Image (cartoon, rainbow, N blue to C red; front, top):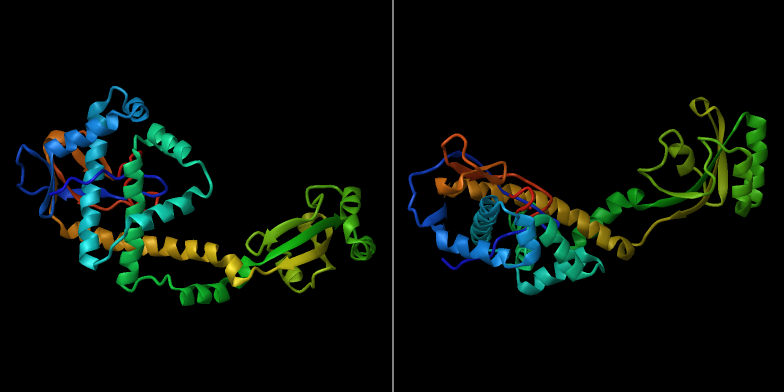
Length: 335
C-alpha cells in the first residue's frame, strides 16, 4: 500500500469509531482498513515528518504518544476516503483541490493560515490539502449517488426558490408615543429620507434605530415583516406595536434583489454544504462496510479521536462528523 499523508482539519472534519475489533493484530501493522494497512513504519514516518516542523512540534509538546494517536486517526480516515472514492468512481485532481483552497482562503495569506493550522491543530500543508480533497470527495460522491445536484440549472432553481431570503431591505425604525406623532414623522421622513438620523435622534430609545440599517428577510423583526413587505422603496408605514411602547414608523429606503450571477457564489456554497452532509453519510456507510481495526498498542478510537485504551478493547471505525466538513480534525481528530 502506498503511504498516504494524514488528513487535517482546515475548514472541515470527519471520522469516529465504535464496535469490537477483528482478530487482525500483526505487530507491524498500526491499523487495518479493509484490504489496506497502515503499517507501524508508515505511522512512525508520518509522525517524524510532522514533528520536523517546529510549529507542529510545539503543538505536540511532550505528548508524542497523543500526537501519534492523532496521526493514526488521520491515516485511517484517508484510507476510508480512498475506498469511498473507488466505490463511487469519483476523482478529485490536484488542480481541483488548489482551486478550492483558494476559495476557502478568500484572499487571506496562505502562509499565515497554514502556520496557524500547524500551531493550533498540529497539521501540515499536506494535511490541509488532503483534508480539502476529502471535502470534495464527499460532495462528488453525493452527486454520483444522486443525493445532490451542483449543476447550474439546480443553482438557478435554488435561486428562484430562495430569492426572498436573498433580498436586502434598508429600513429605518422610529418608535413614537402615539398615532398623530407617527403620522407627522412618517410625512417628514418620506419627504426627506436623508434627514432620518436627525428625526430618529428626537425619539431615541431601545426601539428606535439611530440610522437606516440593512436587513435580510431572516433579520427583520417578525412583527414588522408584513408591513415592510407591503411597502414600496422610498415609502414608509406606521404600525402600533404595544410591546415596543407606542407606534412604529418604518422607512423602507431601498429593496435590493441580487441577480443570479451576484448570488451564485452564495448559492453554490449552500448547495455544496448540503452535498457535503449527504456525502458524509455515504462515506459513513463505506466505513461501516470496511473491517477497520486498530493495533491495541495505540489505544482505541473513541468519537473520532484515538485515545488511551482504558477498557482493553479495540474499536471498529464508525463515523463522527466534525467541522467541518471532510477530512479529519486533528483537534477533534477525526469532515
